[in-house]
Length: 70
Picture 1 (cartoon, rainbow, N blue to C red):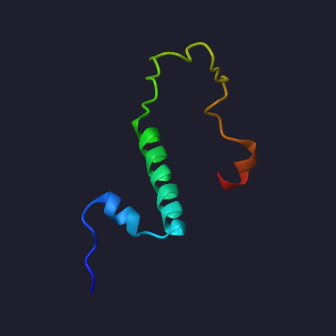
Picture 2 (cartoon, rainbow, N blue to C red):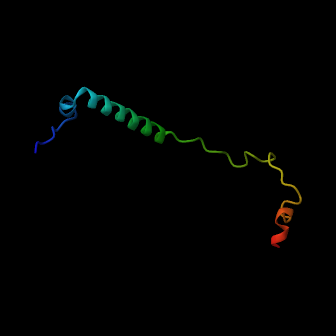
Picture 3 (tube, rainbow, N blue to C red):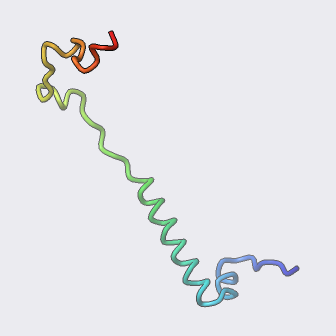
């Protein structure tokens, strides 16, 4: 059993061109994931929807579709 080279450049140089391409694609994928995980959404201010949602007076009334189950 052979041992793996110690540094990334050594490993890279032992890979075939096809495997180097796969490795690069995977590294790009990992980089994108890291970039996305580092993005923090802006906090939503409390009360931002105030006055934009309306509830009807009969909101809590039983629905006619479920009359047979009462």
